[in-house]
Length: 180
Image 1: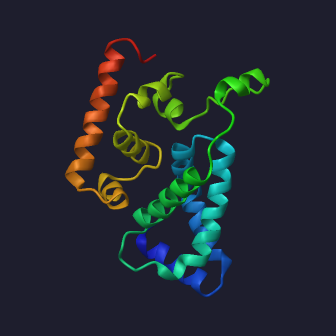
Image 2 (image 1 turned 120 degrees about the vertical axis):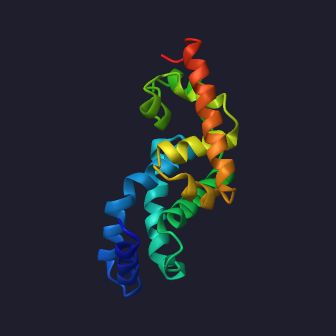
């Protein structure tokens, strides 16, 4: 979706036309879900947050400023919602308890999809929190480094450096045979 198409959809929302929200959902629903899943690591929570995101977008569409870069604006809203969610809730069921309860393990994470490995979460855990977030935003949410810099309020060079550093660490682990 181009900035012009996004602005048109936002104008529809401001006018009370839900078609504008549908256009944005069709263009970014999956991306927003992946941002949430990358932060909360739980499918149901990510789905709930995605639904809440679009309700919030309906309410706050009037606050979007033309020419501010809609992708980074959407990602910032999603990131802030995920952080709020994580602050409010502490997961009470660790993986071991879920397995003991007979529930299947949750293995469909963005890491396993992107890296194609059951070890991906452990590998990403070897990265700093900043590096993990940048890798997820770039690979799972498909944001550019410039958009990530805007979302995280970090210099563009820092974001690019941290991403390259993280990929270098993952490549080293792959050479050591820790990446399947």
